[in-house]
Length: 530
Image (cartoon, rainbow, N blue to C red; front, side, top):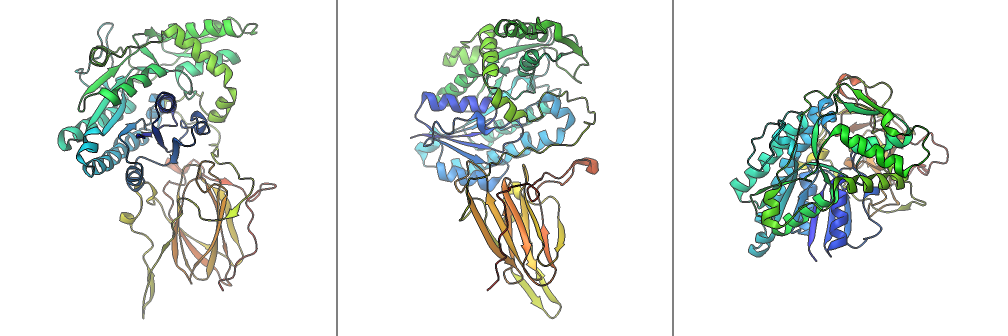
């Protein structure tokens, strides 16, 4: 059985690609996804393919994790969908796009190169690294012309600039090291499972609910629209027949101005949702302030992949819009789960957002917790160096930690005898704890990650002066610690995310459980060290 690794496979295009592969082949698929706001486990058919679909929550920037997955599953192909992908978000937070799309893509490439170089000649010849990119790297077209694979890169947003940089890295790894890479640059995708921040899902949902239909500027910005399943079929074909070192443009042959896209959706909603009080939905259209640096027109020349590999889009824009509207109308539960209050607000104007940031858990409490090990928890003993001056403990070395878990800030807290901290969990943060004393602590852990192999396990261990230990607690593992000694004790904490954003205006990425009624996370009687 062949195995492929799909990074970012819980996102929009990635999850559609995973479904296509599972339905059309007997491949084993390993999904690596960090589960940021746009990634959702509900987009993956986990229960339909329990033997062939494996999900690992993690980051492409975690070199150790990526290396372990490559060694364990020995894939013939790696499809890289992992990226920050929304232009408006890149305007608000460009640094995150540079970190993910450039730096972490570099980590992924390096680990894939190491893996590829270790393969036997036949497996080495069969391996492919496919990098999924965008037509936005080419910049903006005038009223005529098409993007070809030879078009000069002229990115105009932090998003497209970061993707352009990642394309160059992928190209460099092929020409410098020989890594068999393929780059695809696609036009605007639409279809099922798209996070409701992009134009088409926003318009569909707002039209149904009678909310304003915002259109940037004059509505005449033109995009080439590509139904997501057609795109995924093209990517599957590239994995089978694409030539290493080549670039392939993938387009839908469906140029539409934004205003025409919105009017098409309105017509379908009016037809499928008869009796809406606000019908016709076109009456909801509102023209709003344009996005900074908004490219005027994109259009793809997909003749290369068509002539060389025989791919052409099969879904017309009108057919695709109807299928998309029907899907969103039939999947309200998925929409509620992925948005949870986020997703359809206007962003990208560099304005402060009012109100608190809400952290939405991706965990689910188990019906029952049993004692057992927890995936991702690897305690490391800390050596005490003592002499006449007292003692010294080396708390951590960055070269011994996975890249994505390296502490980015640090603090030491004091906990009084008998006092517990927690239980709580983090949505997108790993904690690095060092229990060094004085006295001892119980560390309580509950694995509430539904797709973890140790889901439902609970672990209680004693660390501290008698057993100086460091522990990394991954996101989603509920944790608490309690001082079980007779004196105040110190705990060093090194989280891999800042506790507050720039200007310290945002809250900790933390969901607390100790004050919840009927919480399954209860600390029992303290263990004695004996």
